[in-house]
Length: 306
Image 1 (cartoon, helix red, strand yellow):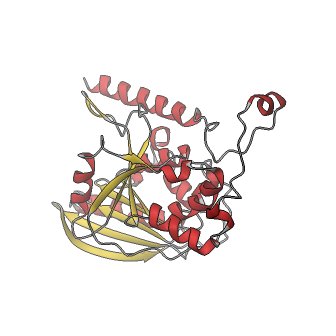
Image 2 (image 1 turned 45 degrees about the vertical axis):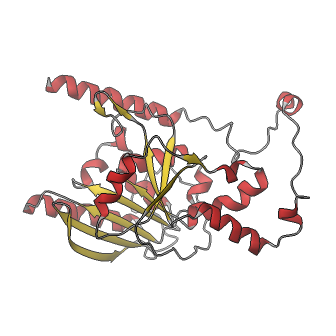
Image 3 (image 1 turned 120 degrees about the vertical axis):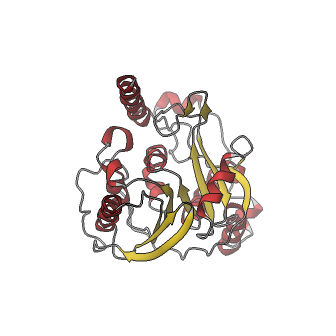
């Protein structure tokens, strides 16, 4: 029985890896116009939106304010990938997901687990961020606001690595704040499982504009596990720059028992301590914006269109 489960996990890891390689971005607005002759001849005609009152009459400051009201609902976006199957949660091991899903939500570190429980009840009830699909000009101007003014929340490091595979590399430069919920085991365990997880600290090391990383730990409270958890945190700090703060929340039976803030150790502009980065490796430096302050209440779901 154990051998069968091990074989299933190994095959799922292979499928997951192949899924990451097969991402097709031809339908994304992030991709420029086609340059091949046959593609130019048969593509649909599109009209320029530069004469729209939104762009011709409103100054950029007002447009950005409108985009922020539409895309920054509560300041946080909780990411989901996949659905529940009869065999249980295959979300973490299987690549059979339909799309990247997200729910805008508020955060309160005093009840960090309650947020995720309420999210799962709303998996089938979400609306898309249609503003980004309106036209290419709106997409170009509004997309940085979506990524830089929201905190992206992941329930598992697997979700984060999948997210970076699906999202164009140029968009990752806008990320300012990420959070990992319910990290029940030392993160070093995931560091060594490259087929399934990828080297997630290497990916984080390429996000030079990150200002904060939040880790919500609920480890087994024995000396060995806590020591391994601290090693994982130190490994993460070595991958992040000194401008990034690592917020660590430790839980015991769902109750917050400690909270601390540590600083990244890598100097800005220097290479990451980890080599061989393959995800998000060509990220440009941009001027970061201050992040919002959160309180807690769930809001309608959003689906991010890469």
